[in-house]
Amino acid sequence: AVRREGRLALALVNGGMYGPDHGPVGLFMASGEERHAINLRDGEGNFHLKPNGVFWLDTAGLAHVTVSEAFPAHLYRARYATQSGPMLLIDGDLHPELRPESTNKLVRNGVGVSADGKTVQLVISNGNVRFHDLATLFRDELGCDDALFLDASVSNMWTRGSVPTSRYGAVIAVTQKVAR
Image (cartoon, rainbow, N blue to C red; front, side, top):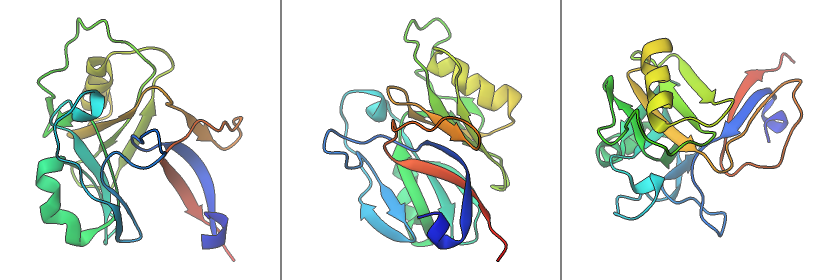
């Protein structure tokens, strides 16, 4: 699909949570089309550790991470979107449920966005980490105000030159336009 659009894939990362049927658990948008509605329900698991959030690109190409309950006001200007959870950072503050002493450690990936929406940080841990560890990395080392957990159990990242795997649900692709 990337090649058909005249682009070269530079990196791929898991981009959200999907259910047993391989369908999205929450909001999914592609090319401005809402393919699965936003999920504001309560439930169990990481996705439902409220607040959860939406990573999205607007029609001007700027990136955002927005708390799910606030996202519907932005729907009209979203081009691509994926919902996951929990939020890691909200306006520079850690999600209130993230604890530095937690024993819940897994390989995790997430996405953070700069305040101006021009820089997206995609991160995957090299080993097992807490949500708190990932959140403070985005805030203290990468300068993000807003960040979202994407996945843990199938977290994977492919970059050019690495060995591809098939452990992906939704995919966020970093691409480069190919000169014709």
